[in-house]
Amino acid sequence: MSVSFAEIRESSPTVFDQGCGTRVVLDHIMSKWGVLVLSCLSDGTRRWGELRREVDGISEKMLATTLRTLSADGLVHRESLPTVPPHVEYSLTPLGRDLMDRMLPLMEWVATHADGMLGRE
Image (cartoon, rainbow, N blue to C red; front, side):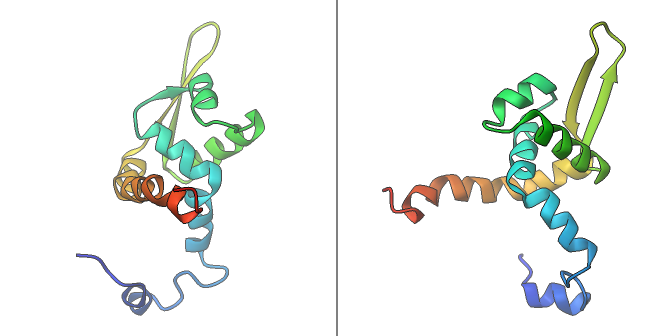
């Protein structure tokens, strides 16, 4: 059963107000790059180069920043393996998987409706 925005605000009146941490988290996960990186990682563990190729158009700097932010938020796990050359893998944490279980239906909806909404159908 879904909850309305009013019900969320009722339980915590200042949630989503300016300066509330909820706005910061929303910015991190719903940003253009955040949502694409998280979506890519929902298919499994990825190395840096794989993410760079799969998230079309992202710069190295933006990928690094996005991964650092999502890791700090507890959504992405970064594992550095002791190999030569260095081998780093990224994966979703349990919290990140829980988020993506909820966000992937939205991604599917966008993929289905975007062209029609932009007048391309």
